[in-house]
Length: 332
Image (cartoon, rainbow, N blue to C red; front, top):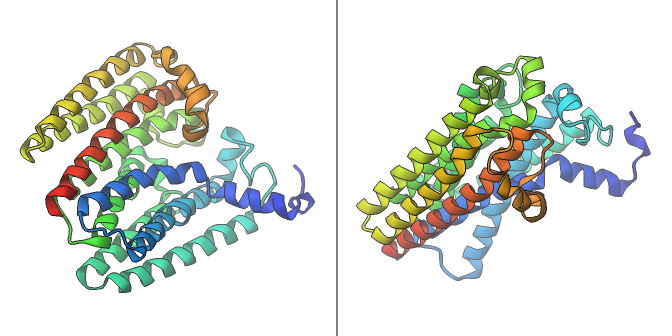
């Protein structure tokens, strides 16, 4: 393994950014955007656009980046097996440098959270700071001993659901207005959606998980039933979304959601039947279309998950953006 001192400053900077895993930052942006839209209170002013920018930085490069950096730091031995090209196992960054990476990002995130909380003020400011503190706390205990929540899917999946799908919505909402009840429901739906996706994302490390004693669902019950479990959660989330849309009076949206559910099931069936090659007609979209955004994998089951994710995420994003826009218009 090459010494970290053999790398140039430019290589070091690039490796530190890679440690923060920029691709994962994208995952929180839709929830943040929908939370803001659902508030119906953001104004087209420099002030509000600056707040929006800071919100995205806090939950993207800082919040999500922190959790990814911590994960790499504490999973060095596992990554030597599963992802040896990552910055630490490849030798591009030392363990000490990695600790500085997530330590500095944590301090900046906390400082930014405190400043914004005081700027918002009142109960909204308290909620905002609690959301950010919860996200950072879960981001740490998810990977760090002695808790290391990721070792057990029954703890790790809810932690991811809260961090990526729930507090993001609430933070974005309270940044501009009082909490909207409809936004809370969207946050709950995203909680379950994030849970189901992290369950399937574990396919990429199933070999290392099995050898190291990680209790991922794919290790406990196998690929087919892991897909089935995740698909049930996703389909129930879409069904619940449709019911909520009807109750809110968004009847056209309800039909859109039900149509999306039907399409999702049509993709789920072949994947359940064959977790390795199911829905292979979507492989081109993964390899040539969205590969840089959602990643690539040498694990067949994880590739099947990526193929499903292209369809599922697009459908869910469209519906939640429409819902957030309609909710926001109601409160304008």
